[in-house]
Image (cartoon, rainbow, N blue to C red; front, side, top):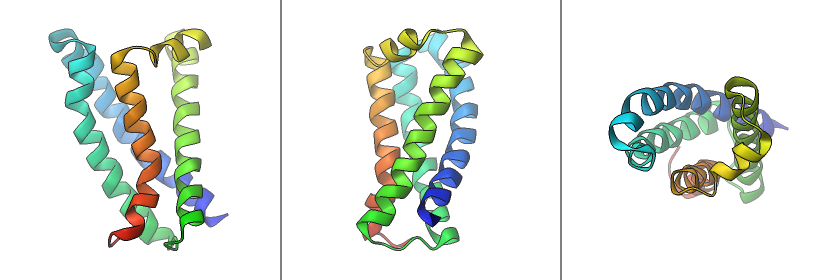
Amino acid sequence: MKSIVAGAAYFAIVFAVGFALGTIRVLGLAPATGETVAVLIEGPFILGASWLACGFVIRRFIIPPDTSSRLIMGAAALGLLLGAETLLGVFGFGQTLADVIARYATLAGALGLAGQVLFGLFPLMRQRHAG
């Protein structure tokens, strides 16, 4: 249960940072560089913030370094992130569920999804690193 709560906290921190960075990407970077380049520019910043947030949450919630605890934390965070992104697309931007899913077939969408998968794996990856 503690790993699920930690995953929710990890998600919340990264979602807030991602919302801010995503706004900058969509309103500032993408019109000037194109969507794919904007995602490539944003990626290292959100992944760096995710790595730091992951370490903070692991220390705060004292998540043990065993594989199952870390996978549960990452899976909970990733599930919440994908769910929130879907809800934001449908209710915030008026997209259909098919539109949200089709976005992953674009290069920018695939790059974003790859970053999200890394986000979900960070708790496991931090298993071997000091908090």
